[in-house]
Figure (tube, rainbow, N blue to C red):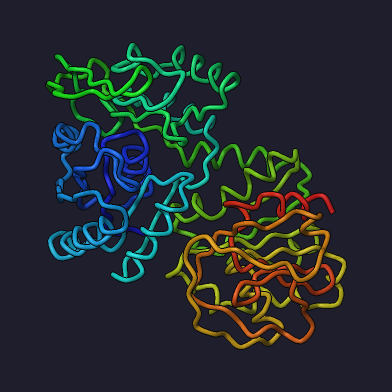
Length: 438
């Protein structure tokens, strides 16, 4: 599935890596979009290194669309919307990739703007394990320079340092002592990429100034750079192929859990966003699993598993509703002993199989639900915040009871079948781990 995509681009490791993933999955990266914020404390956009982003774009031979924003909270979203409109007109983009990892604030707002503009929204490193992520960056020859530090125990001497294996080990040591995020997801640092597999030439820093606000907070400014020839042209490692190979090794075992991917089979970016966060949780529980696309389901496969999870999908993906015959096994009496968990789209499939009518009802972002029934899927856990991302709901089938709700049901249950309209893989991992350990 090839699309014309724009990348929300900051120059840092996250936006560079998703550019790499977009290319690897055979998409056309039509442009990079940089929102140059006058507010260094913007909730949405990195400002450090903005003045030299055009050098990265030149090395990758990708058009750069720069758009100015004052960086005022919420108002800057209108600037983002205007920039995406311009990219849609100028470069005929069909979708947008962001480097959001943990921030529900950023992700939900990008999702909402893309929905308004009828654009596909991709967040392919959403919820990625930070150790795996940092290892992949180094394995694939990303040269990561630290351009900003913003908290203790980081000091001025770290500015301009490259995150190589030795530096990564130091970050891991700091994590064990101070509970920092080695990927900077707590706002500890900001990065700038000097080289990647997509760069035709490497960026070399000639000089820079350090602007310190305090002993543990400062940025690189007035950075002078040049493009130089690469000694060894980086090879684009097949990250997704390597991951598939790991899954094959895992799948050769006697798997305990079947994870059904409800996204289009050819769309690997959505598999990274909506399936991989689930399998990470399964791996954390030392369980074995198999990931299978819904198109490949048959009765023989279903018979093998006692625990089955149906994944979520993005807002614009409803192809699975054309193939409901693939899910008739959910209601069959011979499968009544199986434990089934449907997440968002998976929940909607369960309700559809039991005869429910759909309702157009959109929720995007964090919500505070009310628990109606204490159930083992919660195991006495509270649900302070849930991450919602859907444009449809359903009238609840008469067989089901409601475990938790906002203005609409969010967790439903019938015998061993559970559905969550929200995404527990984002903020409520315990729901999935409880399910795995029934």
